[in-house]
Length: 192
Image 1 (cartoon, helix red, strand yellow):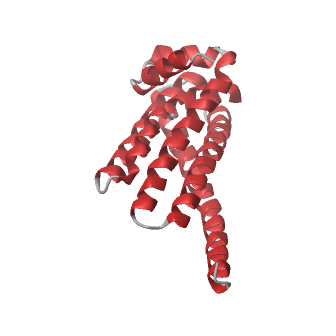
Image 2: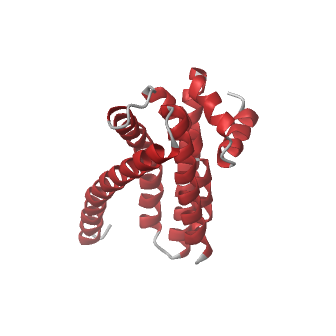
């Protein structure tokens, strides 16, 4: 894997370069690289949250946040790709396969790297929000190009997909969060 070429593609994706999305849609050899982008961006966001947790003195919560951010970043990527595929092909008769959406949405996640700044008071949350919105806009371009339909259909598909991923992520995080609270209570009860 050519790391320099990958970074170049991520930058082009972040610049909303339509040609880049067409290239990655067609190049099946970039599926693994798109996943690597998602993993690296999720790690960056996790590190930002982890550093914020350490600064606030919650090392246990920081570690849990690091793990959850990485896992949910990757899980959310797959769920979003499959949901947008389902919505786009069934509701709007778009033409794509799941691999095309995995590749284009993987690169569209690049701006979420701003989550690395999450540990900076006030600015970190804003940077994370900007990265998330920017990634969502890139996701519209990615979906539009992968499913070969107009921007309105892409926006609707992305919004539906995002809402579904958000609800699933909340449910998973709630279950894991409750589990973490139980582990914390147990370790506290036993002097751990």
